[in-house]
Length: 461
Picture 1 (cartoon, rainbow, N blue to C red):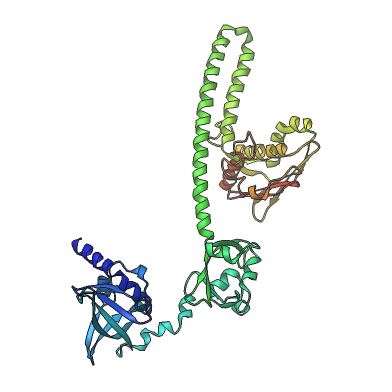
Picture 2 (picture 1 turned 45 degrees about the vertical axis):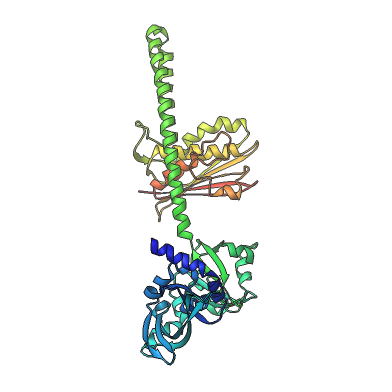
């Protein structure tokens, strides 16, 4: 620690010399009175492939990283060898001269260096890497584009061409800003400096890729570089983590809700049973109340998707059209009051092995959403279709309600997300978890002011 402090003190006392050396175009090394290197000027660092930010201790850097080696005398100088970046050895002549203060006292020594060239014993193949740098760029997983001051493309590696789906011959000399403005019209050079994301269609598929663009200048002001990185999978992983956390919260919320409601209903059930004993003449009414308490509890459990109904649970051969028709009856009264027409178009579907409760939850959640979105004199169309070659059932529910804003379309299926004042944000999340049990999917198509279409795909298991 003492040595480091002394070295730092020496460096500070010689700072004015260091500042002068950094502005020089020649190569210099500064040593203190003990012979320790306290500074290497920027020009020398640059030719060796380094910057001042790479260095914490100049003495260690000079002898351990640059691997300083004395070759022998040369006229009034000394020939030394330094190892530059990428393991290239470079030879210099160095001549030290003393630096004195105003009193004629020696305070340091300055080494003036001249580049002699690469060592003669250096194989040519070791520096061939610099003759073909584009080969290295074509091996990277990131896209690499070089543009001139007018943003004309002068180079694009293979990965950049692949990410944009553009052939190299069409990329070269093209105006880069015009290319990316097809995907993000408001993009600018200033916004590129901060980093931008654009979404481009994936080559040979209907999917999309999200690209992160990083932009900056090369050493020369004539050239600029744009680095492209495909962050699609990173974003998917991030969304998966967020969704998992939301499902965890939703599950905890549902479990707490069920527990509290169950406690309340259990108390109600107990008091009703006591009244039933006292008023045997009204036993039928109390039986009805008790049955309704049990039914409400089962409905809550099924709606939240936490446990299956023990009486109706399990997969059986069902007529899916009949089951859907049965649960649509629950909405008839509300539909009549709102003057909403529910139109059914059932296709021919063979008996399907499914859990009846799953069908019920799908219909309850989706049709209820449509009823809430429609005003008077609206219409709901529900149709079913069976694809025998894929053994797949498709249920579609369409309405002419208010629709969903584009910015919310991808979020409505996430747990706890809702645009309703009294909504829980669990309905569509439960639907998604159900269709995934049947290796299926749920797709939502909507446009604000024009209505919504929900497409449920269920595959036989």
